[in-house]
Image 1 (cartoon, helix red, strand yellow):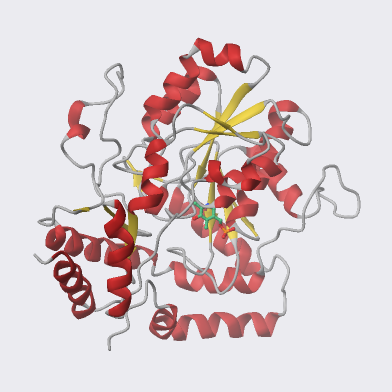
Image 2 (image 1 turned 30 degrees about the horizontal axis):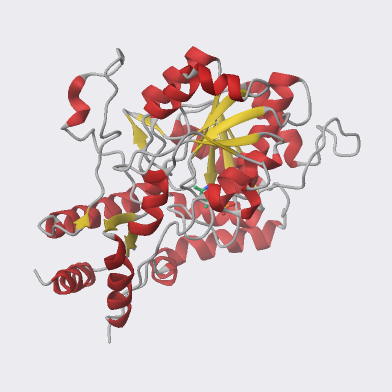
Length: 410
Ligand SMILES: *Cc1c(COP(=O)(O)O)cnc(C)c1O
């Protein structure tokens, strides 16, 4: 029987074995395990790649979010943490860490529904929350301070709209780029648009290490300096500290491995896009399965002056890096299809089975929600991600397609 995993990290290692082995060997020889030269080199290479002033290696994508938010609280409020009355707008359809980082920064996550076509935060709903005066009366002591958009599955949020709204309402923007490394919004790399961007080097991400790792990107000198302090206990001098800090450094060894793999990122993202193109071409005739769209928003706002009218019909230049190729299948059939694929030896995944606002951790008044979050709830019931290993063969991709077709009997 065939066995097609979502991702085949062993295959990728074999492909890059020489580079990775020699990078590790170099570390064994120099023995500079804490903030060694590879961490600096990676920071400088990724700064150049994203075209941002600063990149700061940290211990995970989650810590990159927490440190970004903590640094913003210190800079904007002059206090260690946000207040509970400070709300940060984010999506309920993301990995837990996005919302959890908001809680850990002292603020309250404010969940706003997604666009059902892109699965990303819907800027129109953010706008209507902010202008809805009745909402303000209900939560009169609360105040939105920032937006935390997630570029889910490797597809950019509508960043023109989000930055425009942020400017209008004096909000900060932290981009969660954990799934979007190398992705673009209108010629700009994701992570270079908001006040900070946060990257994850979790092994299964587009640029993954051999363990945990992450990075904060920013053009703001003060934020960069604060993040550098927070990741090493909270001070420039770790024996005499200023802030409530963490031990959240990026490991030298991870830095070296990620640096070796970084050489291949554009090639690998291109391979992901090629596989996605084949899936989309071959599966487009099946009515019961909805394929990913490569455009920022299905419903462009009428009142926007910044937007040319192109995006209702024509996809933008291809900035999607397909961390996942995520389809949507009508409710009862989703689980049936997943079971069928498993019998055929094909792994598929549901990212994510629970929306954040339904989790206990965000209960007990720890979060707020705006209106109905039905698109997010519906997505948890219908999404199904297909294998998208950059090195998977044409034969394997065809087999996945063949099995989906045979399930739907087309
Ligand atoms: C993976 C991920 C994170 C967390 O990254 P870690 O490196 O695992 O801590 C945060 N947000 C999103 C959207 C992710 O996919």
